[in-house]
Amino acid sequence: GVWMGVHPNLANLVKPIRKLRRKDDISPEVSVVRDIRERNFRLYTDAGRVCRPLFIVENQQLVLQKKHIKWLLNGQNDEGSEFKWEHLVKNGIVELLDAEEEETVMISMTPEDLENSRLQQQGIDPHENDGEFDPAGRLKAGISAHTDSCEIHPSMILGS
Image 1 (cartoon, rainbow, N blue to C red):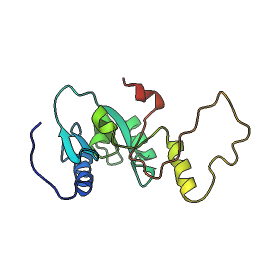
Image 2: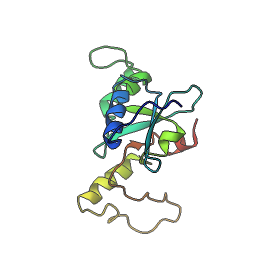
Image 3: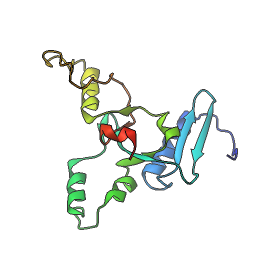
């Protein structure tokens, strides 16, 4: 890559760059990587990188809402404008991450895990009424206080 310059506070640089990407001011295929150990910030724009879609999470809530699903199924939003997959990306509902950026974000496996995290932050045990242990059941993920993204479906972690 090409070294472009120095910034005094990388943590405050990453968030605005990601917001610009989510608003489609920067191509959604640009990867934003902050390497804490190396104390650097990288933007990957090279062709041929495999990127996979993830739901965007803000304040432990999916940005995706039922209206977006309805719009996708109908092919248009409430105003009658066309609404397709690419609109989810351009409107900051879904983002594309490559392997490098994936290493630097917290990804929830399911929306249920996000809900459990919110409950635990409120002091409520999300597994209090789970009943008996089911050895064939899905192992529950650890609770994270901060999540950036959520899998669209757990099988998507394997790629397409």
